[in-house]
Length: 302
Ligand code: GRG
Image (cartoon, rainbow, N blue to C red):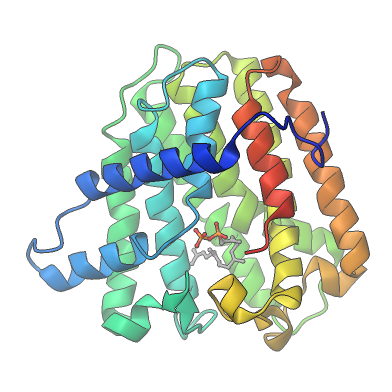
């Protein structure tokens, strides 16, 4: 098995379609209805949540639960909680005070439709709601609900996701080393992907060695994911990406392509994905969805 030649028999398209539909139904159930007072905020939250995201983090969470022999349905609240945090971070990242973007997920950004004030509040509300949604998860014998919530707040907090965003903001226009770039990517991107995988494992009551393996896989796939994202930013059009292409260059942001070049960046993403595959050995062939997802993330074009 290698990331470039995953098991051909695994139908990832059908897998993603089925899991995405289940996640969308669960999100619809968990989130306050659009008409709940005040409707503006609930419409704004739902606008971005249902704007057509790829649902990669929920898919990784559910696939991790399955790799550990658990039920993907049991992992749904945790998968949805991560998606709420991810969507909040995108809404806030798109604001004029941050990345100032007009398009996301192929649609106008939240603040372009609802105004900046409501967009900030929609992000805040999704972040808060994430913990309410995660709180619906059943505890596992090895992992009480508190341990699951801790996993979530650590990944979303000021030492991980927010730390990455701070370093990113502060690094704009400055010379950035490869080590600093890795610091940003590990926090801004890999932390939430890693958290999705570990939460899936926790919901399946996985033994500690499997939890460790999922975290290791998540960190490597997360870094590869961000390197590919940086490559796509310079090689794809805005139409293909559903968001403004070329933003990194425009904002004079350090990226792997800008520091080490496109070819070396591709090689680095391939190498990280191969090492991520190696982390899955402990599952002895039961992590086929995770393998297929990692291979897909490496090959993705949006
Ligand atoms: C505002 C606290 C805060 C953090 C923002 C999300 C983020 C951090 C910045 C957005 C820009 C960026 C490059 C983030 C890295 C993670 C990433 C590549 C997000 C996009 O994820 P996809 O491709 O998006 O899974 P969809 O829309 O498909 O869910």
